[in-house]
Image (cartoon, rainbow, N blue to C red; front, side, top):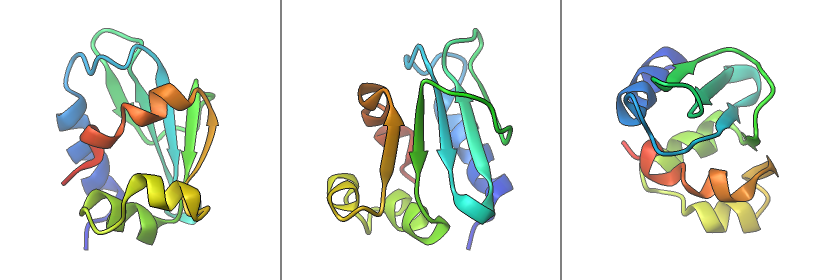
Length: 101
């Protein structure tokens, strides 16, 4: 199973220099940590800092792994309360392709 550093590195590669997000997003994985995507800076950056973001996606590590492996549908996770979004929902929707493994 991947750890936070491996997942962060994967997302960093998927985001690249310009993800097209144009905003900041924080993925809050509870005790497992956080992933902060700065899609507003050039080049884009991905860190494990806990900073304010335009959108915050909160979910458990296990649900995040299931989502990124294609075993959990993002819309179903949201409807079941496994995935919560605070802030700009449109930005959160653009995340899906960046999270696939």
